[in-house]
Amino acid sequence: MDKKFIKLYAWVLRGSQRRKIFKFLDKPKTPTLIKEEAGIKVSNVSDILRLMEKNGLAKCLNPKDKLGRLYQLTNAGNKIRKELYSQ
Figure 1 (cartoon, helix red, strand yellow):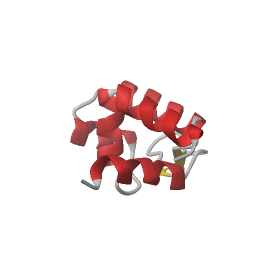
Figure 2: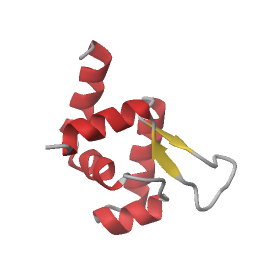
Figure 3: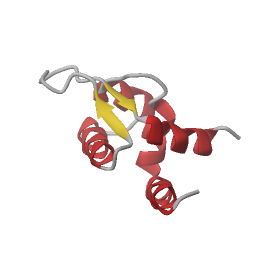
Figure 4: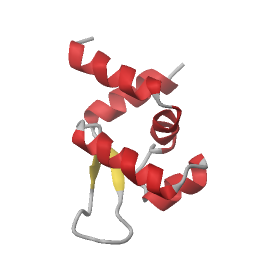
């Protein structure tokens, strides 16, 4: 594992809400769907998704839309998700 992966993996592990979002982001979803599945406030989901985007772990598929934005994990995000939940 490289240093960047380890740093991002540790960042995800440190946050219970981040771990939940990774668990439920198995396919493209809106923040509202993630909120319903994970039981996290939608504002927190949105904040975490923005941080995940900034760190290259997720991307918004329709960034110009104001409502119903779809997010999915990037390759780096999928590697972390696999590491977290493949056991």
